[in-house]
Image (cartoon, rainbow, N blue to C red; front, top):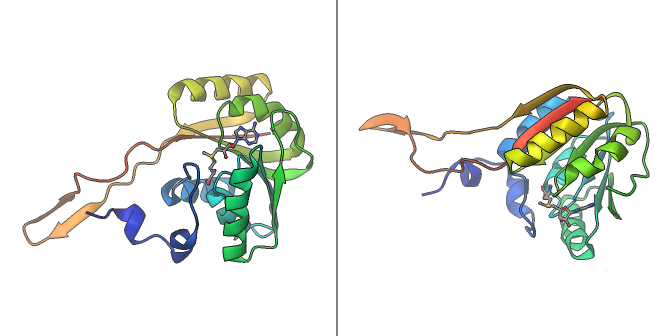
Length: 192
Ligand SMILES: C[S@@+](CC[C@H](N)C(=O)[O-])C[C@H]1O[C@@H](n2cnc3c(N)ncnc32)[C@H](O)[C@@H]1O
């Protein structure tokens, strides 16, 4: 049986190619809402992966620079950028634990192993009050990430998990579906 991740998501997610594990619309939604991304926002994203988050940000933001250290994944994201016709999405090969070229940015999103190691560069790249977001599959990563946020004096750290329950509405009764996507990743938000 299909669940809400297959059925009601906007068409553009159905067009996009998939390589490495993508961030699903249920998590992208809360990232867009909690960072308040708008047409004035300048964003940095890493790793690009299939570019699902990068594309979603670029559909709303002024400019998004997305980094990946692997050429083959940047190629998938390039294809997705083409499909969506996004001229404000810049794809760069690079390791964000070593360097982020941009400065004075509004939002930095991190979805990669060891993303806590990129927080120092994220802090440098962000403007005051700018948001950093970590998408982290495991609790151990969350602890490391939040400890590093605190060391770097980020403020308002908030960790959440989005659980979307599909509800079956049928003649015999209305109840939550027993199927669906449960855990994807934890989301950590904080401000410089
Ligand atoms: C799970 S994927 C990201 C998926 C993406 N957020 C999406 O929604 O499609 C993780 C990516 O991080 C990249 N990566 C890992 N370490 C990195 C680093 N230090 N700097 C830049 N990219 C990195 C990997 O090559 C991989 O493509």
